[in-house]
Amino acid sequence: MSTFRQRLSAILLTFAIIFPMISNAAFANPVAAADSSATATLKGVSWGDPSRDWGNGTSSFNWTAITGDLDDMKNGGITWVRFEFEYATPFSFYDQLLPLMTQRGLQPIALVGKNPPENDLGDDASRQQFRDWLGQAVARYKGSIRTWEIDNEPNLGGAFWNTPDPGTAGYADAAHRYVLHLQDAYTTIKSLQPDAVVMHGGISEWTMEPWVKELIKLNAHQWMDAIAFHPYARDPNGIISRMNDFRKAIGAQSQLAAKPLWITEIGFHTGLDPDLPGLVPDEQTKATHLTQMMTKLRDSDITTPIFWYNLHEGRTVTAGYGLVSKDPKTLATTYLPAYSAYRQLSFSTSSPSPSPSPS
Image (cartoon, rainbow, N blue to C red):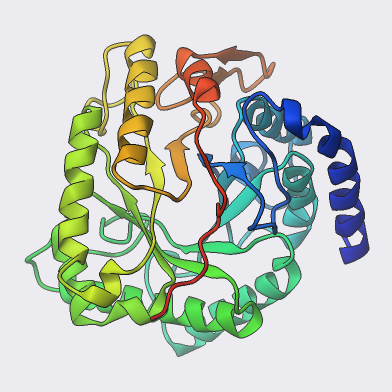
C-alpha cells in the first residue's frame, strides 16, 4: 500500500511544510522518523497496540481514531512514540501507519512482538519463522524505523514471557531462552540494518536485580545496543532510587554498564488497581509528579528519550495512566492536567537517537 516513493514524497512534503515553522515551534522541533541528527524533544509516549486498541488487529481499523491519537501526540510536543509491532498484524497496517507518524514528526520505537508461542522461545521451526518474519519487517521498514525493542518486561511472568519467580526452578532457563530470542532478533536486524538500535525489552523494576544477574552470566550485552528499564514507583524520588539501583546492578559488568539506558515506560495512574505501581490520589498530583519526575531524570543524566505510559487507557474512558481520556465510541477527548504539564516541558538534545554502542 505504501511504496518507497510514496514514503519519500510524504517526508519531503512534511519537511517543506514544517521547515518555515521551526523557529517558532512552541514545544518541539519535529524530525522525520529516520533522521537521527536534527534536534528534537526527548518527550515520548508508550502508545500500546493501535491495531487492537482501534481495530481487530488484522483487517478492520478505525483510522479516524488512530490519526486523532497521533495528532494529540504532535500537539502535546511529543516526538517519539513506542508502539507494539505485532506478528499477527498485517504489514498493510504499518504501511499506512508509519507515514502518518512521519508526517507528524514522530520517531517510532517498534516494540517487537512474537509468533506463537508468544511468551516463550519455541522450537527451532518457530525460531526460524520469527527470524523470517522479522527480516521481512526490517527490510520493509528500515527507512522508517531505526529503533527496535525486543519484547516487553521479560523478567515478569505471564503474558510477556514465561518467567517463573526468581529463585524457583526454571528462572535461569527462562532468562536463557529470552537471551536466545534477543540474539535471534539482534542478528536478524543487524544483518539488514547495521545502524539500527536494538534494545533489550524494557525490564520491570519489580524483580529487576536477579534478572540483571542472569543477563551478566549469559553475556547478553553482545546482543543489544541499548537496554530499556521501567522504573515505576510511588513518587518521583522512588523512581530515582530505582534508577540508581538499576545502574548499580548493570554496573557489575562493564560491557552492560556501557549500554545507553532508555526509559520506555514510566508513569503514574488514578483509578486503576491499587496494586499497579504509581497510584496517585488525583489527576493534578499525576501532573505534578510528571513534571518533577522528568526534571529529576534529566538531572540524573538520562539523555535518551523518556516514554510516558500511556496516551490513554485503550477503549475506556478511565483516566488511569493516560495523558488524555478518550470516549471509545464518540472519540470525545478530555485533555488531562498531565497532558498540559507534559506539553509545557522543554528538554532536547542534538542526538535524539544514540548510535549503537560497542558490544
